[in-house]
Length: 290
Image 1 (tube, rainbow, N blue to C red):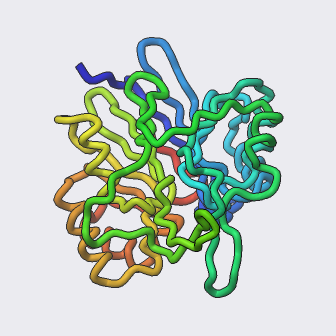
Image 2: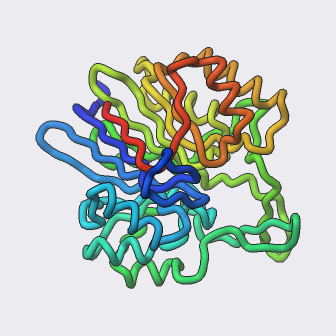
Image 3: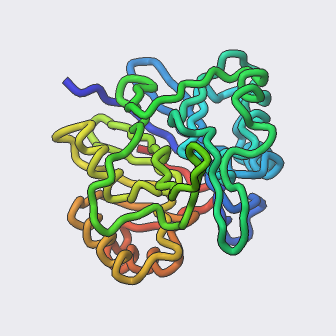
């Protein structure tokens, strides 16, 4: 029997945009606080930390949230706009041995060469040693990992579709040789909410949002898709890729979608056209109660 949650509360702590006349701060990146409850037990997961701890701290305070709430920190992939300041977040929890969940390749060299050579992976101050000294305990795996009954990290997502790709030209170095980097460390969080269905929370969806959704449904066979939240990294995608992605999502039939960060305006428009009032753009401070 598949395990499920009774309630799921998601707060978007950081995102590229803020609501009209909001005192919240926007930043390029994403961070969520996910509060899961089941059978009298609750577990709070911060998914990603964006890239500016000061802005994150500002929004946490305005939203009435405290870093001490965090039981687990999950990093969806190595990019700086999702991971910069991990150690400061861990320190701010005031906890020792805080679970830090990510893919086993999180700390590899990761860079772009356009418009110029630049490292875009884990930044200075957030090394393995920094995280452990701050009080973090690393759980690095490419496998799905249960965070609590009904709440799971996908681990590495199989790349099945023929129209999805990481959305950006990235590279790494293996044995002294430059190699294309497909961001295989891209993971997502999936919740199975009783009476509702699956809620998928993504960072940038470099694995492809359709691949991610289909894989989540394999992890929880027979459970309908309630909603999808996150960045879909279609900001520089071709019209053809956007159209194929939206069509595939329509076929999967989630009850709602909320996309932002790296999704891009053109893709958001297509999602709005396809899903109508079942679609909403993401923004800092947005709250989801499932």
